[in-house]
Image (cartoon, rainbow, N blue to C red; front, side, top):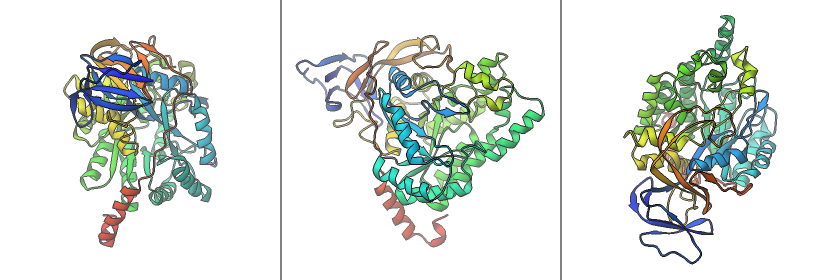
Length: 479
C-alpha cells in the first residue's frame, strides 16, 4: 500500500517542519515538501494538522490473569482502542506465576497477542529465582528480542520480588545487556497497612490509598535505585505516582546514575478524591496500584515531566469491569487492581500539556513516543518521522474536540477514568505499518496484523559502562 500524507506539519522530538510524508510497503519512503502523488496512492489531507510518530505505550496489561480474574481487554480490542487514539505500539508484560517457567510464560503471552492489530513487544517479569530463570533470561535476550525485565516490589505472597531476587535478576540483566524495571512499592509495608485498615473496619475502596501511602513508594524506588547503582545496571521505574519516588529518581540522575522514570496520564490528571465517591462502582473503578494521589503530587509529576526527570508517559492499561471489581465489595484488598486509558493518553496529554503550555509539541512527541523508543532500543525504527522508519503515524487535528465517555470509547471496559472530560486535540488519522487504520472516528483494522517487535540488547551502552567501571577506583563503582 502507498499512502501520501500531504500538506501537514511534521513534529518530531527534535524539530518541527512543513513536509509531505510518503509511506510505501510499511515504511516511510520520503519526507519533503511538494512530493508527487504516486499512481494509485491514497492521499491523506493533513492541511492545518500535525504529522507525528505514533504513540508508544510502554506499560499495558492486555488479557492479564490477575487476582482471580482476567482483564477484560484482550490484545485485539486493546490495540484497536490504542489506534483510535493515535497509539501504534504497546509494550505489554509477561508475568509468570512463581515457579512457572518464564520462557513458557513468554510463549503463552505471544500466543495471546497473535490477535493484535498493532505492533507490540514484551517486558518479562521475574517473580521467582533459580538456575532455570537465569538461563531463560539469556534465551529471551539472545533469541527472542527481550531487553527488559520487570520486578514487582509489591504483592506479597504472590508475585513480589524480594531483595534476593532483585540482586540476582539485576546482576543477570547486567551480564546480558538488558535494562531492569520495577514496580516500586514496599510490599511488606503494604501488606501490614492493608491488615491495619481491615482491623479498623475500613474495608471499602477508601482503604486502598490509605494502605499504600506515598512513603511506601518512595522507599521502594530508592531501594531499587541503590541496588541498581551498586550493580551498575540501568533502571526504569514504572508508574511514578508521587513526589517521593520522583525525588529518588531526580537525586540519582543528578548523581549521574542511569535511571529513567515513567508517569501515567491518570496520575497526572486524577486525584485521590475518587476513592471517597459514595458509589462503590465509581470508587472501585479507580483502584489501581500505586493509587491516585492528592493534587500536590500531580503538580510535582508535571514538573518532573517538564524537567526531563520523568521521560515517558504510559497508561498501565489493565481493565476490569464493574462485576469484576465487585469481587472486593466487602474487602478492598480483593478489588482487582487496574484502570484503562490506552485510547485517551495522547488526547489528555495534549489538552492538559501542550494546550496549557506545560509541554511543547516536540516534548509531547518525546514523552509519548520517542523516549520510549530510545530507552527500549527500537529507535529510529519507531518514534520518528524519518525515511526508513516504520510508517506508524498519527495525523493530529489540534482543533478537534471530543468529550471522553465510556459510552463512546473503543476500550472493552464499562468505565473511563477520564469520563466527561472535554479535550481539544485528537487523532484524525492513524497509520499502522503504512495503512490507514483509523479515519475520522472509524476503525479499519485487521485481526492479527500486529507484529512482534524485537528489541535488541544494549551492547554499546554496556560497553560504555564497562569502560567507566574499569577507569573508576574500586570504591567509586558503587559511588
